[in-house]
Length: 108
View 1: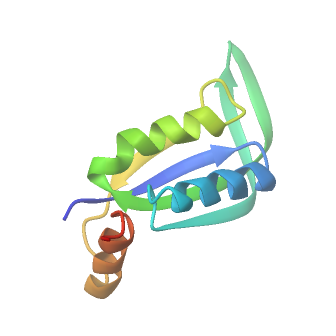
View 2: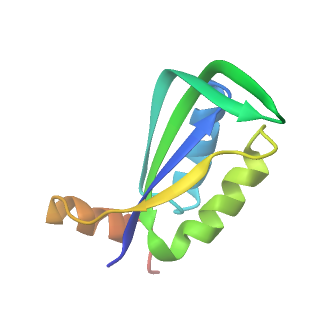
């Protein structure tokens, strides 16, 4: 099984929670975590910016990343949201099996 850890930044805690709930409800992620607050420093349109953001982490299968990215972009307030997927190379086998199982539609 190929699994991914997806790092997303959002404008607010509320936005992160709403996107996280939507990802889990659609089974695009088995679990999401919201880390608030976070301070960012970045270049945007030729200007150095700083501001508070919220981190949203989603755990999913590799095959769902494209759909997850599309869902986040549809719900996100930023024009170019930060959404990056990193491979999960190892971990608790029981947790990883749960993650894989919870990102599949229920049989029935």
